[in-house]
Every structure is written in structure tokens, then in C-alpha cells.
Length: 163
Image (tube, rainbow, N blue to C red):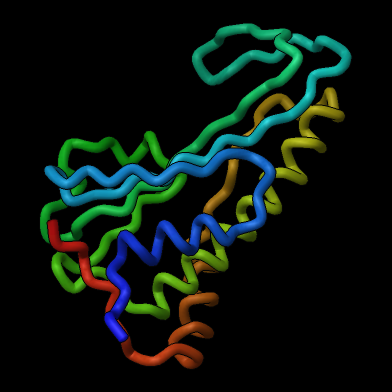
């Protein structure tokens, strides 16, 4: 059986996640990076005006909130990306990619972020007191999940894909 590379692992793993919004995976071969875009949607039945991060007001019937995760080659650095534009920036080890445990921990934590994000967005929209909505990434929580995954999954690599 052929071993799965990082690209195939991410494609299949993202497809398997339970999420009512949109998830897309973009592979930038030139910069050796992947960007995972997450888009959450909420119905604006009351026609409330919402202000986005750029200060633009909207009262559209469907409000979208998006964020992204950067997965980049740690040997090449951020390759022109700005870390502040992402929920998280996760490095892989050049051609070696990620360990299977790291990938499994990532997908587990991404599902948690999606679940919490959906719940928190609904709460934010229903509560006039909250002024800002944003997803949260916890390095500590991810590290805890990684430690658990390392004891569960064999030492297998998800190599960077050949093209």
C-alpha cells in the first residue's frame, strides 16, 4: 500500500470533517505552502447591520465569516505570507512533511475549532454585548492533542507531495 502524502491526507481529512460552512484547500507549489480557508455562515433574519474587520457595514440576509490556516515549509519560512493574516501558521519539515500523529492532531483540533466557532458565532450574533467575533487557536490545546496522537499513531510521515 502506497503511503499517503501531506496533500492527499489534508484533502481526505478536510472532506471528512463535519462542518456546515465551506472549507477549501489551496496548494501553492511555488512557495511550498497550503492555505486552508474556513467560511462560516449565519442567517441574518432580523437584518442586523454587522461591521466587518475592515469597517464595512452589511445587513445581508446571510453573513459570512472567514479565516484561514497557513501550512508552510519550515525550511523556507513564511514565503512572503504575513502570519497576522492567519488563525494559525503551522510548519512542516521540508520534504519530510508532517508526522501522521501531527496530521491527526491537526484534524482533531480543526474539528474542535469548527464546532466552537459555529457555536460562538451563533452566540455572538444573538448577544448585543459582544462586539468582536474571532476564532481562537490554542497552542496548548493543540500540543495536548499532539501528545495524545503521538502515543496512538505509528511513526509515519506524511511527506510533502512530489509534482
